[in-house]
Amino acid sequence: MEIARQLGNSVKRKLPQRHSQDLPGVIEGVVRLASFGSDSALSVQFCYGAGATRAIFDRVQIEQVLFNLVRNAIEATPAEMRRVLTIATDCAPERMIEISIADNGPGPASGIA
Image: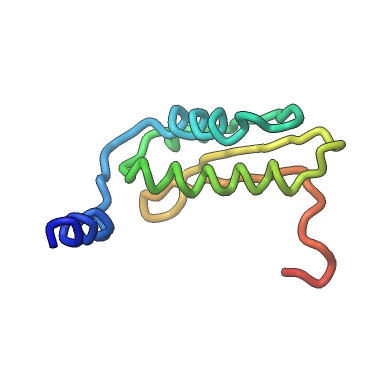
């Protein structure tokens, strides 16, 4: 019974832990982790907008999203191509920060959107 209770407690949705943090440090750490073990070189360009480098956010949530996007970009770009990733931050309305990620991959196949 105790095991079931502990398991239930461990899978309960935890509340976000939001703190003021440095975005470039988080972004660059995720890129290092996500590109580890990649079979070809990855060129990354970081473009941090003025006033878009510090925000209040849940670090784990942002790291998960960024990791998935970076890994998808790496895996979707053919190994024979030079992989280029551009990650930028910019100020958005209502005191928000927008993070954009672009790669030089071929994009989705025709008919997939």
